Image 1 (spheres, rainbow, N blue to C red):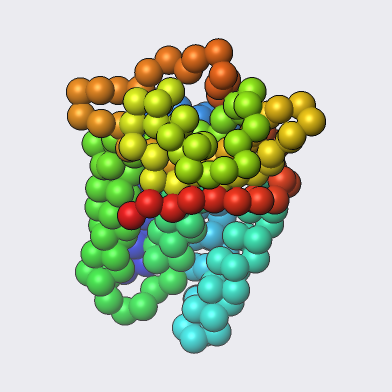
Image 2: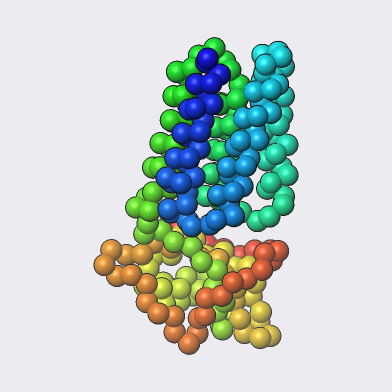
Length: 212
């Protein structure tokens, strides 16, 4: 009876996670299928393993958590918030599949996961802080001049400017910038000397500046 109650709690929790939090905020359909499939698969395997031996089932369930995480994270590139939802779906599956003898504790932990994601991924949480990779059509070997230029074209306070590449031959700079939009100011349109662009990963950072 307790196992059925755990299954029911997991079904409610994973539906709230996927259809109540993730999809309304991020609208990525392929990960909806992934989250649901991983959760149900973990519940099925973990409950079968824990049925024979409680301690062995719990250990194997945690091992399954690690193996599935490695396989999933190496199969495609995920954003950090998508990684958080993925691990949450796995955690809900283990909590719903392994019977610990305390139904309320498992249900409470499921609720805790949902509450943390609701708050941490809320659109209003730190919404003035942004990040983008920019390609500037000017080489900036001096980081103070780079930060000043970025603050001018973004109309924001730059907190971090990590230079990925400075090309003195072609006169370009590739920089990963993290900044905070000033209240009521927004970001200004880039001038002719800056063009935001996607940059392939793999470039090593050559210089950077951090502001508190």
